[in-house]
Image (cartoon, rainbow, N blue to C red):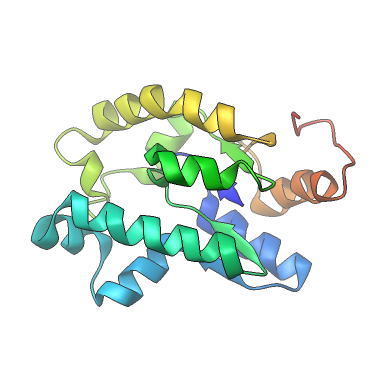
Length: 170
């Protein structure tokens, strides 16, 4: 289970981790788009954030119950109390990214509706609001700033077997 802010690398690291484990990746945002038949940004605009969050809750809950591979959870899914409760029973890797790096990775991405207006200001606000939640849910925290996805996977893998590396913080 991978959690983190926008730009933390959940999808990219999730793909690399799944590949290394010989498993499949469930990216919850991608699954939501598949079910809705439209991009996340369009769901927000056409159906509203409430509808998106309901779909997100459904996809995350189903994934936690039945998915055998890696799950990359959308950055805001952890705001749902039921999701937080469900995550408590799982190994949760928080991909921590520094603000400056997250801002570079996210850029002016119009596909991220919660960052509309002033993306840097909105991103800082999201990070400040969600940081305590991410940290509270994390079984392990792995920094991603300045690291290649494969290096991040190298830090995650030992945490899956109870070993640790120098970068991963348990």
